[in-house]
Amino acid sequence: MESKMNDMNNKGMFGLEEKLSSMLKPVMPDPVFMGKLKTRLAKTPAILIEKSKRRMGVIVVGAGLFAGALTVWIISKLKKR
Image (cartoon, rainbow, N blue to C red; front, side, top):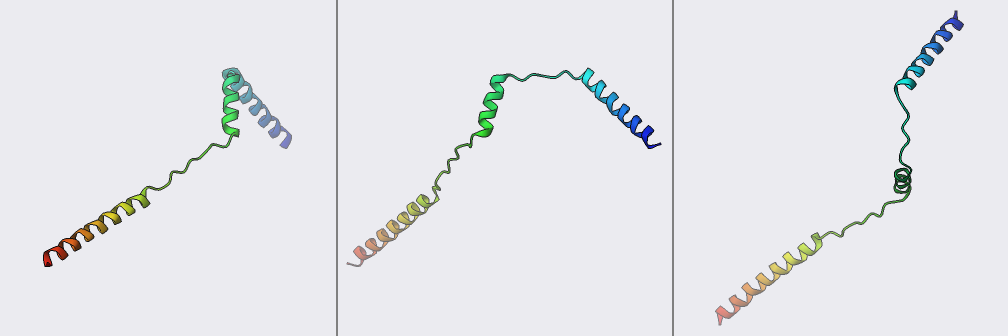
């Protein structure tokens, strides 16, 4: 009984394989494309990490606040004279 089931499964699978092979034709990829793809996949990409511009922004804002406070302080000293 089991051998009949195995025969049916094998025939069914082989029938499917035959149908698919008759319907689908194999495609040969372009060798140049395959070579480039292989190189790109095997080569580690160079990753550039940009430095944060936030630090420069904080320095500029701090310098502006300091300059403004210094200006206010100098003006208040000149007015008291």
